[in-house]
Image (cartoon, rainbow, N blue to C red; front, side, top):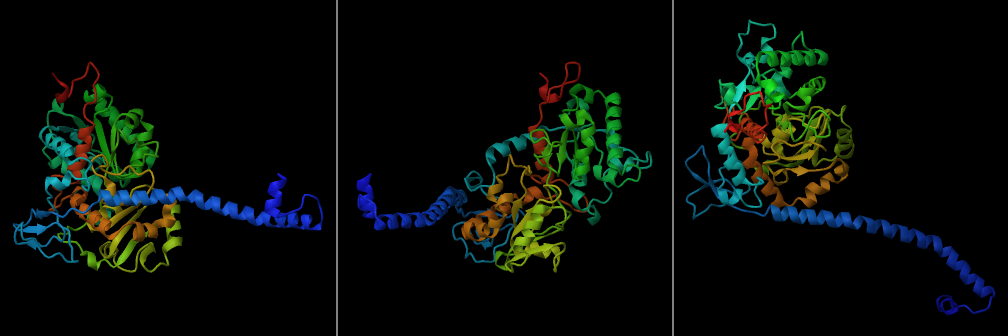
Length: 483
C-alpha cells in the first residue's frame, strides 16, 4: 500500500506538510472525478439504444431493398415501368425514369409479391385463401335490412343509407359502405342453414342520429331488445350463442353499447373502426379492425413526388389529445413541417398532396380517417397511436408502407423522418403504398359496388378467418362443418 502511495503521490512514508497538501489536492479533485464518472455512465447507458436504432434502420433498409419491375396498368393497354410508372415501349427496352413519379393501381408480378420487400406477409397463402373465400363464403342478413321504410319508426336504423356519399356522414362512411357492399355482394344467401355468418344490420350511426335513440343508454337497450327478438324468432342465435353473428360500427358508442349485453360483448364479432386492444370492450382475436374512410373522390394519378415539397403534414383538434398537444408544442413553428391546430390555412386535401409524410396521431380514439386519407393521396402515413390494432395486419406488413412511431419517441420524429428513413427507403415505402392502396377504398359509381381486394372484400376476409365457430348440439350446423 505504501508503495502505491509513493508512486501515485510521490509522498514520503512519514507525515509532513507536503504529504498533507497532496492528500488535500486529492480530496479537492474527487468531486470533479465523480461528476465525470456519472456523465460517462449516462452516455454509456444510451449506447444500446443508439445501436438498436442503427440496427433497426439497417434491417428496414435491407427489407425494403429496391426491386424495379414492369407492370401492366389494368385500366390501360400499355406497359409501364415499376420505378417511374411511365409507358415503356417493351419489356426489354425499359424507359427513362425521372422524378415525376406517379402512382397507379398496380398489378405487380408474383416475384415481387413474394419477396421480402413486399407489403404482404405471405401473398401466396393469402391469395389462395382469399380465392377460396370468394367461392364459398355465405352470409345471412336478418330480414330487417329489407323492410319497408314506412313499416316502422326504426326502419332507417336497419335499412341501407339512401346517400352514403353524403359528406355529412364523414367518419362513419365505412359503416354504411360495408352494409351496402354486402347487400350487393355474392356472399349473401337466402338460406340461413348454409350461412357461415349472420349479419345484424342495425346502424350505430343511424341510432345516434335518431330522435328516439340518441343516448348511449337508449341505444344499448335497443340492441338488447333486438337480440332478444331475433333469438326468439330465429334459432341461429341460440345455436351458437351469437359467436357466428357480427355487427359493424364506426362510432365508439357501438363499443359501449355492447358492454350491457354479455353475449354481444363476449361472443359476437364486432367490426369496428375504434380498434384499440388496450380497450376492455375490444377483443383483438375476436373482433375486426375496420379502416375508417371518408367518402373521397377517386384519383387516377397522384401528385408526383417532386411536387411534395413539405416533409410532414398534420391538421386536427388538440383539445382531446395529450399526444397532439405535445407534437404541436414541439413542431408547430418548424417551417419544414406543416403542423396545424384545427384547420390549415389551405385546403385540407392539399396538405396530403404536398407532403411526403402525413401524421396519424391518436385523438380521443386510436383511429382517425387520416390513415386512409394518407394512403388515398399517396402520402406515407406516420402512425403515432399506441395500442392501435391496425386493419388487415395479419395480411399486410404495415412497416413496408408506413412509419410507426411510439408515443415516447415523439421528440425524435423529425430525426427519424430525415435521417433514419433514406431516400431509397422512402421510394420503397411509396411503391408499396401504391400496391396496398386498393385495400383502403370503397369503390363508388353512384352506388357502393364491391370490387375485388377493396375494403369490403378485405374485411370479409377477416370474417372468413374467424369461421368455424362450433354450434350447440341441438342447433343446425353451418354448411362448412357438415359431414
